[in-house]
Amino acid sequence: MTTTSKSSDPIRSRGLDTIMIHGIGHGPAIAGAVVTPIFQSATFEIGAGADIVRYIRNSNTPNHDMLGAKLAALEHAEAGLVLASGMAAVSTTMLTVLAAGDHVLAQRGIYGGASKFFAAVCPSLGIEADFIDGTEPSSWGELLRPNTRAIYVEPMTNPLLVVADLHAVTDFSRHHGLVSIIDNTFATPVNFRAFEFGFDLSIHSCTKYINGHDDIVAGAVMGRAEWIDRIATRSRTLGGALDPHAAFLLDRGLKTLGVRVRQQNDSGLHVARFLAGHPAVRRVNYPGLESHPQHARAKGLFAGFGGTLSFDLQGGAEAADRFVAATELATNAPSLGGVETLVMRPSVISHASLTRQEREEIGITDGLIRLSVGLEAVEDIINDLDQAMRSGRA
Ligand SMILES: *Cc1c(COP(=O)(O)O)cnc(C)c1O
Image (tube, rainbow, N blue to C red; front, side, top):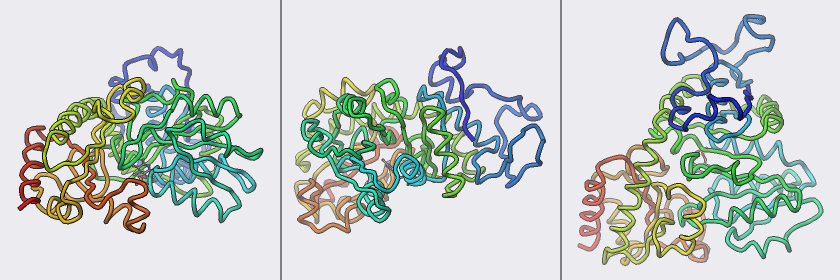
């Protein structure tokens, strides 16, 4: 289920890259295997080395235990729990933190599935939600109510990469006794350490950077052991457990998180600078660019700016359509954070259910392209974008 260990533990004070590979070194090697094997067993003999009932839905097989402990160590959190998807992590966490009669503040512009959870699922369960502008802390107080229980944010929004005032979020929640939750998917523990900034819970879609290979769906939540135990208990009822085979793949992907994210930080900045100087591009949204409205804040918060950015093409919908059809290296597909470069038009994929006016109000124009920069040679990525923009103009 969940594994706890003290931060004074010398193993936990190792570098993140070491923890990604060796975890916290719990348990003997199985038959000398260097890699933790897949425990593809739904149930486990009672009393066989543990006084708990081990069952996959209880998220307490050796694969779950090892990953929960490793992810917790990476975020310098007390405990961690892996779940079946990022949305399983969001819903299970929030349905543990919140109950009927509670009120929650959620940042505007967060992941679509999480937005729907707050806007549609919460009200149906008697939980009220209000959306806040993450960059305007002075506007949050007027939305507070006596029953406000939690505040939920992301380090940078998707696809516009708005950077919320994360210091203000944890100050505000401490001052008003709220539970502060961050979905740290975009930054990863490599670029942002949520617990050093005072967040109570950190959620990840491990589908993205943490696994990094576009081949599984998984999620995780980290925090104090007390919280993680409660979330794990609720997940036994809600049922969003990760399959052991996916857990094995997640551990394999996770081992290279550090080198991947550092490379993606680097390539992301290169690509953003190239796009910012391109005549077919109207605007680039990337917190690493000096022109980004929250660039100074982002520099203070993050070790790197990540590999996801968006840009607006001069030619609008038609140019954007031609562009995504003309890329050869980059695939036109949703999702992000993997080794493959992906492009996608938010106006027709992730935000297609909104009207054009609603989209434009939140800055999602028809010419907007979201780009997840992969690990291909950065010159090849840039050449591909360049040739696709030429075809887009043709
Ligand atoms: C993709 C994503 C999710 C949902 O994750 P799944 O693994 O697809 O369920 C949640 N939050 C963010 C920021 C994401 O990018």
